[in-house]
Amino acid sequence: MNTDLAIIEPLNRWAVNHVDLTVAIASNTVYLAITLSIIAFLYSVMRNASKPMSLLQSLRLLITEGFIKLVIPVGLASLASDVISHLFERPRPFAAHSNIEMVITQSPNGGMPSLLVTFTVALGVAVMFFSRKMGITIIVLAIAAGVGRIAAGIHYPSDIVVGALLGAGIAWGYKVIFRDIKRRASL
Image 1 (cartoon, rainbow, N blue to C red):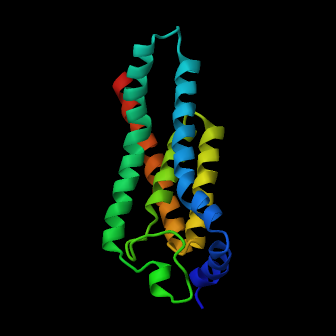
Image 2: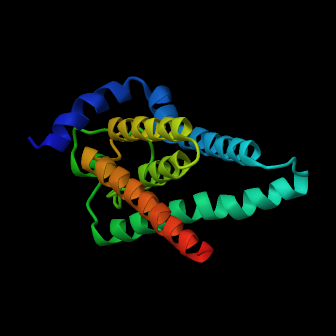
Image 3: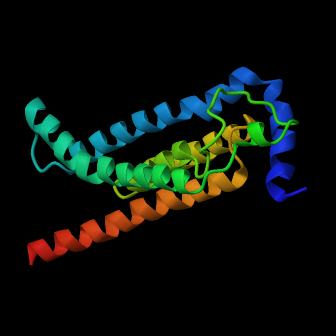
């Protein structure tokens, strides 16, 4: 038995008996992560403001800075995940192994890497650059979602690991490149 299956089987047996909790962990954590990201970003903007801002100024800053700091790196990571999933197709665990039950409805292919984990880890890393504690919290939520998706029989552990590394790598790389471009522009 390979390592992926050795991890999936006991988690899946547990998930079959705890469907509601599995769904909450595996699917709904991304909404909490998005909400926490927005709160952390707004707090960071308000905390770093040199003077009080009007609602319009705050919205403008949220849209422009939020797009640059959050949407672009998360979008790039998600796009990369989608491209890789089309290049590296393998059936999901529930489709490939008769002893793994599908707890959450998914298509039978395209699970490598996990798009949800890629998205959420990229979001967590992007948030870490302006709120370390909140970013780490979001990454922990991503890991919990990944474990939930393994338990649900829709991802192998390797799908989760690759998604996490992809999301973190792209978000980190984007930040380094963005910081370098911003530094050069100010010279």
